[in-house]
Image (tube, rainbow, N blue to C red; front, top):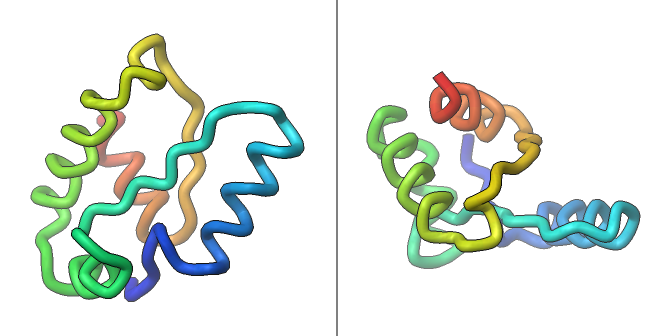
Length: 84
C-alpha cells in the first residue's frame, strides 16, 4: 500500500524484466499521476481497483492474446482478484 506503478523502483524492475526477457511489460497505473496512484492504493476499494485494472488490461492491444503477470504486495492481490 502506498506504492505506485510509476515510481523509480517499479520503473527499474519493469526495465530489468523487459531487457532480460525481451518482452513487453505493462506497469499498470490506476491513478492519473504517480501521487494519485499511491493515494488510490489506500483509498479506493479493492473491487474498484480490480475493475480499473481490468479496463486498462482490456484496452491494451499488446495484452489481448494473454499475458503472464507478476505483482508485488497489494499488486499481487489485485492480479489475483482480476484472475478470479
